[in-house]
Length: 363
Image 1 (cartoon, rainbow, N blue to C red):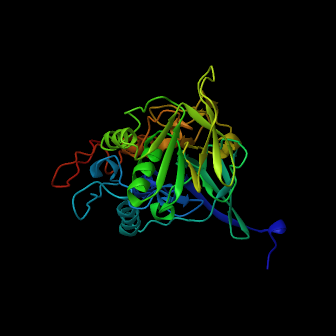
Image 2 (image 1 turned 45 degrees about the vertical axis):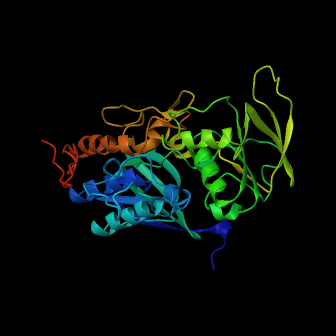
Image 3 (image 1 turned 90 degrees about the vertical axis):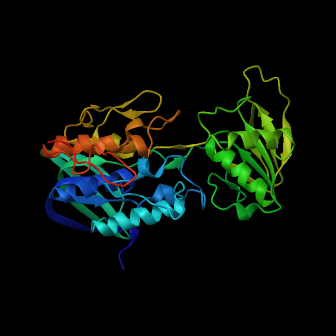
């Protein structure tokens, strides 16, 4: 058995035209395009396909309509014609992989990425074994939600505290404090209330932004707060967590609000997630602005490092106010395909109709 300290290194002597890092929807869509065009590529993901979506709450439904999150010209249909749930979409992604027989090296994170000799050298790790390979070009389609935004407060690592809402059942007849005021926090609060939890909601602002919340959720939340179904603590932030309660302090500049202790059996810190920029940094990509967004040419998605491209929500870095979603990242695939092959994407310029037909782009 090989020890973790001295992992065996295997060298892949194949020189690939392109390597895709990330097997979310946009990474998979790019893989289908390259496969259809006969490009010699290799595809990695640190976890399973659609990993970020896999930790969405169970049975949560997408805000976007099905045609907007469908990929690779394959219609996304649900049994009742409603918006896709987490489970519907994961099944759909698996079906796309099967339909196009995509070869994806899952559970194999890329640990190092460096430019060398007009191309790139990638080191990956699977179990106890390291692998290296070379690719002429690389596309980072790694998404922007690798890790929760930590609050760095006492008690954040206690076992009853989580940055992920997965299953409402866990909070049946429990005192639950949810921190956050965007879509994830609001949906969790409503679902857990209806399931039988005693829900309190802490938000750093006085009111909610209707642009950050599904339009059908905000009116219900406002009614529940008004009628006392959900306790609301506006303009507050958690400053400490104990096994029995959470200390909320003022979020205002003048700190006028007095600190309050809220009893809680469980705490959900749904304050957002951030992108891990390590691979961009290793490769020499410049990260700009508050979001630390990879510098790139919007016409081709090529970064300031020649031959290195970015696709999907990773192009926006850690989004403070969301502007990139699955639905408006499909164009990245067409831009990259045209840049690296000189050919149009086989399913770009989609004209989605009720018949499910898609038009091909003009060459």
